[in-house]
Image (cartoon, rainbow, N blue to C red):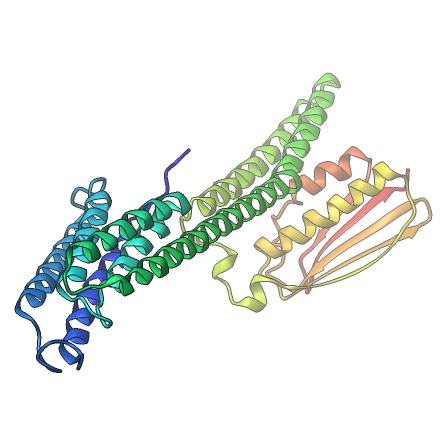
Length: 358
């Protein structure tokens, strides 16, 4: 399984660590309860916070330049605990910022490693804080409750971080499944049907060759080659779009042309096989108009006339020129059922089709 990439996350945590250093110095500087009153910083505390700021800046630079990325998270966790312990020892009192340093160390691990590592780091933080209380003459047993609050905060941070990670993983699975279904639909409804059309055309060519109509078979093969080349270009563009490579196609057109309006009127009665072919013809005609015609309106009409089903596909796009040939995928379906197809490029571009009902 591919490991997640935490480069951006680690860089954001490094920025927050630099901000923590600056805010901690500011809070101690304006704190009126520290020795010496407000606007005063103890020399040792100032030295410790300056060292923390230097460490934070060095870590940020290393991460931004991708230096020793595999080792820095472990090193930063250890250094965060060390500085939190030092700050707790040097700034003992009710307003000590050491609690924030411990919580930051837990958060930095929790967002990256999950609940288990958060709890482990919380236990380490609580142990170090209790050790500071035990060796400091000026910190009484009243400060023990801070360790309890730190344990509660660490556990909650780990639980929330774990839930957030599971939620993101679930959302990623949903997005991946949705993409898979979308690709499967595109392949089934588009390119698989195109391959079926190729198979029909090849069968037609075989029949013509058996009857000795080599010239007709050659004409069919020529049209088939053109159709396959067009489908190849579309498949290539589709694959490039999956890879995130920008392709020049109908997506670059204005919205009104890129996605034309559709109007359908259909009423016919036929067997299931014929109905499937008629629906596929309608779908292919709609796709061709949307991809190639630069139309703003596509109109499809289907009705019964005697023993035939009539289909017209009109659009107000660029139309057909005099040398245009019918879309090969549609033509192959029409030919399979012994139908008739004609083009009309004057005014509205029209594709007119007749198919026997059975």
